[in-house]
Image: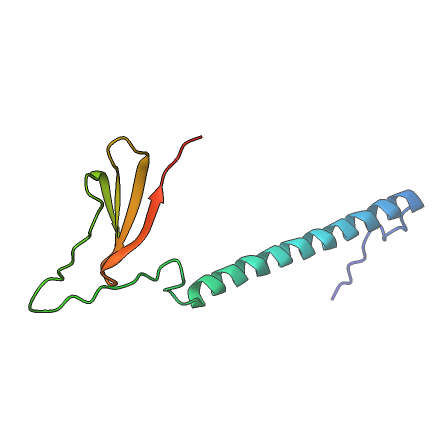
Length: 126
C-alpha cells in the first residue's frame, strides 16, 4: 500500500490569529449553550401545556341543576320602573343592565342557583 503524506503540515498560527480562533470557539460554545437553554424552555412549556389539567379557576362555572321533568323557575325582583337595556348570561348568573327613570345606569346580577340578586352596581362616569 502506498502511504499518502500531506504536502504541507499544519503550521502553528501566529498569536493574533490564535486569539481570533479562541474567541470564535468561545462564541460558538456560548451560542450553543443559549440555544440548548431555549430548546429546553420550549420543551418544558410543551410538557406543561400537555400535562396541566383543564378546569382551572378561569374555566370553572357554577352549574345550575336543571330537573329532568320541569325547567327551573325563579323570579328576579328588579326595582320598580327599572328599564332593561341589555341582558347577559354567564354560568348561573344573569346580568341586567339598565336604569331607573332619572337615575344613573345600574347593573343588577341575579344568581339563578341562589335565587336572589347578588349584586346591584351603580355605574358612574367621571
